[in-house]
Image 1 (tube, one colour):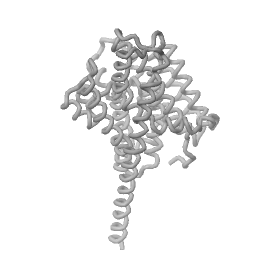
Image 2 (cartoon, one colour):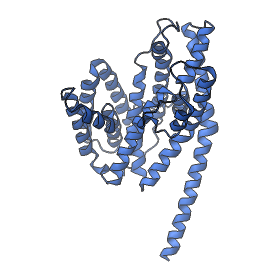
Image 3 (cartoon, one colour):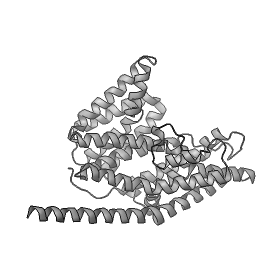
Length: 346
C-alpha cells in the first residue's frame, strides 16, 4: 500500500474543468449536430470539449487504484463505488426523464421501461437507450471497475505494470490488424477490454504509482500509453491528451497547487452531478431559448447556470447526505462485526 498523502485538490479542479469543457461541447457542437435548424450561438463552438471525458478517465484510473490500495476486501470497494455513483445518478435519471417527457426533446426520448432499466446503470450493457446520451461514459467506467475488481480479487494489483503492458499490447494488436480480420471476436474484445480508452485509465494508475516511487518502468508505461493514443486518435487529439499527461505529472510533483482555488474545488465537487444533469436538460432549455430568439453566444450562460444550480442541489442536499448516512451505517455494521469476531475469539 502506498503511504497516504494529502488529498490532491488539484484533481477536483481538473474534474470541474473537464466537466465544464464537456458542457460547452454539448451546448455548442453537439447541440448543433442534433438540431442543425436551430441557429444557436452562431459560429461559437467548443468542438474538442468532449476530450474532457478523456481527462475524467485518467482521473478515474488514479482514484480507483487509490481506492483499491486502501481497501482490504472487494466488498468494501464495491460498497464505496455504489454509494459514490448511485445517489446522484438515480435522481438525475428521474429528473432528466421527467423534464424530457414533459417538454419533449426530439430524438432523445426513451420509454418508461427503458428509463427504469437506466436506473440500474447497466443499460449500456443490454443495448437499452440512455436516458441521457452523456451516460455512455458510465458504461466504460463500470467496465473498468469490473476489470480492476478482478485484478484485486486475483491479487494482481501488485503486478499492474505487467498487466498494463499486456493490456496495451492487446490493444496495439487490435489496432494494427486488418479491419475485417476476426471482426466479431475483436469487437467483443474491444468492448470487454475498453480498448479505446484503456490507455487513459492505465495512465492514471501510473501517475498514482509515481507519487511514491519515481521508477523508470512507470514512465515507460506512460510513454506506451501516449504512443497508443497517437496511433488511435491521431496527432491533434494525441497532442491534447499529451497536455493532460503533462498537467497530471505536474500535479504529482506538486507544481499546480494554485489550482486549489475554492471556485475550482467547488466545481470539482459538483462535477459528477453536473455531468449527469447537464446534457438533455440543457438541450430542452436551448430549444426554449431558440423559440424565444435568445441565440447570442452570451446566453449560453443561462443553461450553464441552471445546470450548475441543479448539480449543486443534487450534490449538497441529496448525494452528500445519503453518502454520509450510508458511510456511517457501513462503519457501524463493520464495527459490530469486529466486536462479534473478537467475542468469538475470546
